[in-house]
Image: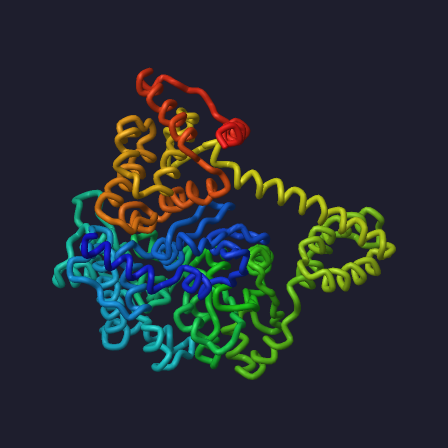
Length: 582
């Protein structure tokens, strides 16, 4: 076994997948394996399984899967070498000198982190000692202390065409790197580069490991856009990160406060509340809700009291419900946002406001009344329709009963009538959910819009045969040479399955301890999910020698026909095949 493969083997052994995944989500034992709600998509019924025997995981709902390295890559948004480094530090292992850390993407990400750190220092220096004092005056007017400015690394981008770009180039960064980091843009006229952020106060965005991954910039006048955020880069996606989460994750509470903007967060933090975050210029996303669920059990939404803020609150509640978070709302009177409230009434009143926050269900039920004439029958009927959808979404039966009773009184309808109606809605929803879950589990046979293996849609029968051969090889690595002789990679029809099969054969020939984990450095996290799916979905079937021979025959026939075959093989056909061969 090559030295680096030996290191990866030791790394995975030192980081049991159930222990690592269990540090992010709650695992429940099921036989010798574990199940959990998938951390990569929103669901109420756990569909993710952690297999202890193969040290892998697979979600039958969204298709995410792989080994412990793949899991860390996906949940921490890292490339392979970064995930290896993180797990090595976790286990106290030393990285070997010849590890493939110099891949282009890993090197570029490192360069972008370095550029962002330099840019943050540049903006901070401009703010505190630059000639243009507008940024400092702005923060002074917002009553931020020097300690808070330093804590958040706030800065100022002067009204210059290319001052930052020149600074970065002097530190050895190329035009292409500066543009890829979204710190510079390229001129259409002469191809030169210019500063993306000009005449704005700057807010560095920091990830959970302390890396500066991007910036938010706010204008000091009425020009548009008011806020400009870093676009998508190899290290930054605004829909997957949260402002100030690097501080909030260390708070000694299972409660997070969600604000609407950077200044609200900073003001609340300065007032003594470390557990406060904000989205990055967009409405909250499912990814952000799942991130918050890793660190909190309760969310208090402190959005602005205007119409837009209230609308955003309703969307946020839905996302938090999907990931099982309790949600509360604060009602601010006499101020439009937390920043203004704290300035007017102080930190203690704001703390009382948090403690007196009311349940999200109350908020949603109150919103059901908007625009309705409850003195009319039509108004009450429409209220019942709207309220029923809210009531059916309450997870706790006891809590649901309380709200059903309250709503029945408001609408002047017998409690039992409303309860029966809600029970019917829940039953239909549950049946629909089970059907949808089963469709997800069996969807691999359909190959609809397969972005990972697009050829499978055209060659469905052959793709299924290829997966069977791959699984047969997985279970018999000691027979790899014989299997390769009888089923050479050349007979494979789809490029992706051929790539998997070839990589497996190469690994098996050089190692006596093969596992699908050994493929993680050659395949993306999404591709590893597909490979794990082949293993996970075939566990209940015995793909024996006769089935293997039949699958080889399918591929050889396709090869002889110059890939002209387009027949289909359904799940029912496969089940009959397995039964006949047992």
